[in-house]
Image (cartoon, rainbow, N blue to C red; front, side):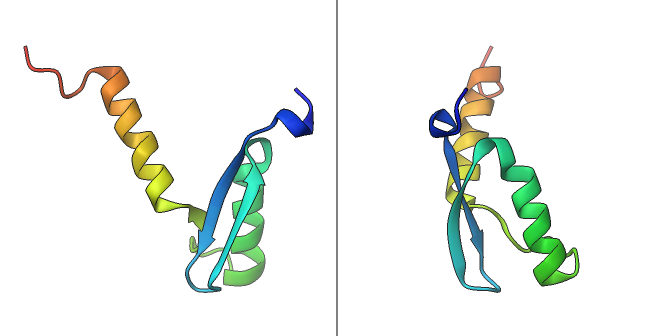
Length: 69
């Protein structure tokens, strides 16, 4: 997969009042680096909460956790 094909993920840091998009392949490293350098390792920057909620909903649906028997 070329870097042009790598989807980007929105990252937010409310404390810095910043929003950016990073390639999915470097997501964990980018968030960790930001938190380490800007916030002494405290988990402040994270995946945009709206996207995280959408992903969680898809996982729940895909796993059938809300299916009634």
